[in-house]
Length: 294
Ligand SMILES: [Zn+2]
Image (cartoon, rainbow, N blue to C red):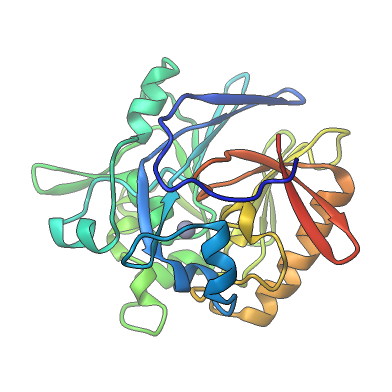
């Protein structure tokens, strides 16, 4: 049965695992946040999106912050660390940040310490995706994963450091500066082999360098981490583009091409912001897509 409607409250976290070829894919949690429903749905009429993602009286909708861990032999790859703890009460209130989940606690539940992570991937540098890879200790900002290569699209590093501009509300320079100072951050572009059968594609649209991560792209079974290209299972029609997206035409192109590819090949989708579903597949009938729990 296709997925119809989101819950209104946060389901508790238990580690959900799927196997994709030799890779193990585990859904973690770094809590939740609330964003304005109108901003999450762009031009989609409220009469429609309120059915799919019911808002609170203040018009916000609850969304997951869901890092994913990809493991294979010596490779311990964390994709999107999460929003992190460096938030004042004011901003916690504005974004409705609830740390009912925490990336470190999620890793600990799997028997892993931050030191065990070999690579951390940011698909783009928006604060709700990468804030958790830097922490404050005695007034200093330090990397949380000291032994990991940190990967970000180069253009996203530049955006995070760019200072005042129309896009800067989504970025914090302090999410990248401490990693650059520690020599841990690598800027990438195009298609990048992160590890065997684990590939990053820099796409753009939602942000200048937003990316997806694909596991076993050429194999019979594959998975895709959608990031904000498809933030929830409810956003699977290509025109359902968030108001946050900086290049709507590009976004539509990217979403059409990649949703079609995922549907044709039966890829397992991994969703960062969906409240109820870490994993789902999409199917295409004519021009419409439908999502199914996986
Ligand atoms: Zn996001």
